[in-house]
Amino acid sequence: MTDVYLEVGQKRVFACAVDWPGWCRAGRDESQALAALAASASHYALVAKQAGLKFSSSGDSDFEVIQRVQGSASTDFGVPGTVLALDLEPLDQPAAERLARLVEACWAVFDRVVAGAPAELRKGPRGGGRDRDKIVDHVVGAETMAYAAKLGLRLRQPEFDDAPAIAAARAAISERLRTAAHGRRTTADPGWPPRYAARRIAWHALDHAWEIEDRTEPEQA
Image (cartoon, rainbow, N blue to C red; front, side, top):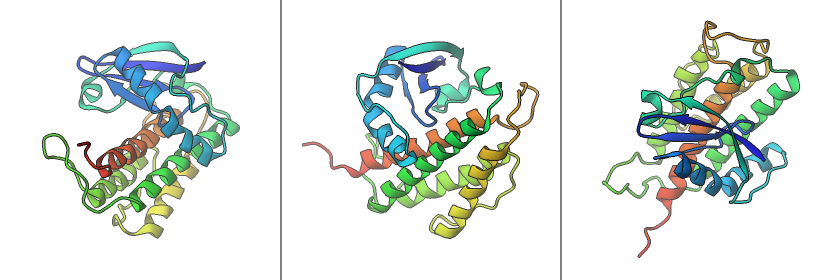
């Protein structure tokens, strides 16, 4: 069984695997969100493999919904934005190490997808969507300017093609996930608890990696 929580907004629902940062998909209702999560299992298996962790890539994953939480405008916009009570619980060092490894694996998958994608991506159904380099710039910008700050880090945004600078920024984020205070937190604590930070960072990288893959494939005749 895979423990899942549902973040329920007015227009969108996210289904997120509690113990697998980044494995989080959305739908118009609960059943669609869970179906999307199951359909992405084989993709997430690549992340687990990169991290050296055992994972079932079955598309009909057996989910147990352990919690439903109220979403917000962020949920309806398309972002899993709710910090769970579980996220505030103490986190020991092996668990923190596992989180960091999975986030690093999501970055590795993102980088591989980017390396294999053309600069110009197929447009969306309404002719929109960023091209490859704009997506990379967006992902790196979110990580260094927004997410890092939520972990108490001050980073400068690297250029989208400055691989050493991006690697250094990500190393600082992973180190913070490994070494941040892992005792019990409260909702009054500033910033993001490590569990939520890992989930949000990993989801963002994977969501855009899978977008690039989808928009690299030719349209079906």
